[in-house]
Image (cartoon, rainbow, N blue to C red; front, top):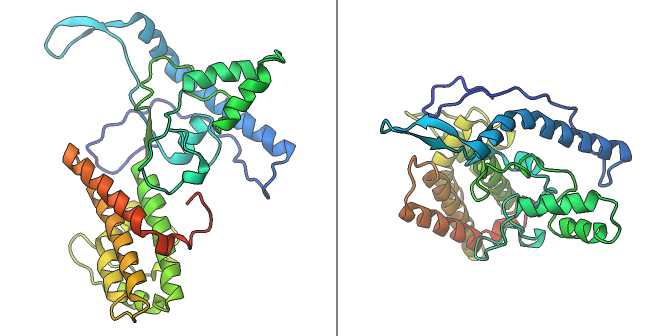
Length: 316
């Protein structure tokens, strides 16, 4: 991706990799042709990245004599610290089955339960060894290796970074903030809130308050109702997080006795998510700001039950 907008984030174009045909599965069961196409796509992706990392992998073994910032010369060994991608790209890069986490081995049943429980981090070098055993002809070790990968929701196709030695396994997976937080958490939560408003017959009032927001510096007025916005860009999500809390407060005014508790829970849910969303935009993070973000996220999970029951599936 080439960025045309001015930014303080430097980027260097390394390569333009080929894009194989997209897999579009019909129904819950993949046909043999779809499975073959998916495996082919994964192989093409891995082959495209091999020449990019080949020279870096060679330098990680022998090093390179380079000039330090203080003017001294020394032997340097490159380490790939992170690779930024959205969640689904990370899943494909690391050969993880959807919709499981590419960073830890949390089971699907715990999705959306907050971060109160720590889970085993993924060991991709172990997966590489298991994949070799799972694809060999040794009948005694192959079933155990396949079952081990299956239990961890790992595919039997080698991931892009599995055999790359010059990586930091603790930091290599970095989710793209816009796709994960803005188009992921915030947008999904807003969809739940819309269903919540429809159930309580407040959706028309919400649309009225939405349309009443006037333009001011740093905020451009939306020209469509919320439900008619089909493509969310960075500017739209920025404006959304600036005005969504006051619009919700105005929409949920004067609740009945039976609505008072669920309305309060819904407001606390969206308020804590927006606070988390705003604080993650800080250019620099400290122990204090990270603690704030963890608390906001915990509060969001604590109050989300009133709206999360409207989610269509467990992966959102």
